[in-house]
Image 1 (cartoon, rainbow over the protein chains, first blue to last red):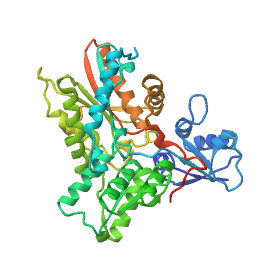
Image 2 (cartoon, each protein chain N blue to C red):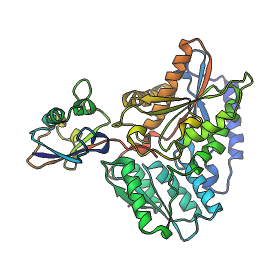
Image 3 (cartoon, chains in turn cyan, brown):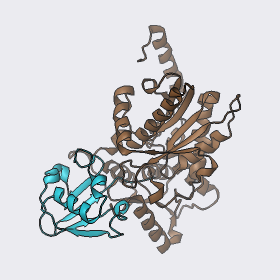
Length: 90
Length: 333
């Protein structure tokens, strides 16, 4: 099970939950599981080619998955995954 | 069509540069805030429409935020809300923080800032270099998380701080009413038909908007004011706010002067940011890209209808503010 930290703009998809659990062995799989449990995730995170949108940052532990294996980045039991958007306003 | 200069024009440009330099001696870094140049974006213009952008990156703090930071501090000094014993504190996504740090250092005030932990490294470093104290809020909660945290800090020790609250402070739009807006009218005058600006605190669009609404062209027409906001709650336009999913700033009262709100997709704004480098030699941040992308849309609509127009927008900051520092560079804080 990975622990996924959800940013404020996506918490309406998770019914307000800040952290959700998902059973997946890679980040790509994790997004598919999130989409299944909370429809709307995939379109927000991935572009039409199935790649992570340029302005979305996904961290596994402290590392940005762009510097790991992108969507193929493996997830260990209990790994923390954070979805971090840009900063709004002022 | 690219600009090319005959020798006589080049000589004139040099003379103008010398004349400008002579006018530009000043007593304090604060005197450099405002009075920014307007640059014409010829290579992005459709036929019959002028496109102008206010170079707010030319402010000494590197962004449009120098104007409201200075105005909020000057107004608070004038009416006694800010005294020497108080620390200036506010929440910021970064640029206002740089501006507070600069103005605070120039005037001898201590500054403390609450920023989301994921603001760009450049902005953390610049503010820390000025001696500003930084507090970080959750990177998952964006600028609204920073707002909630600063309110908590101030509530615990209200006498210690001066909390300008850029989202609620009327001096923020006032800076643009007195400065940016008046400067645009002075430069473009009766030709101006549209003003386009993104909404973060909404200070720019509200202040400039109010000023421009007072201006009436000889044909009786008024300037159309277009506000730009991200098209989705989850977006990549740092500095701009998606109002429906955010704490709405108290100074955002669009009914007073905004004619149209234009939702901007992140991708379109990012593409325009890239295009500005190639087409105009301007390396700016993504909020500036959003402003120009929206202006180009307005320009193309006018051109399609066969109308003429003159559009002004704002280049909020430069692209290098979003760089990650290299390992061997100096680290502050």
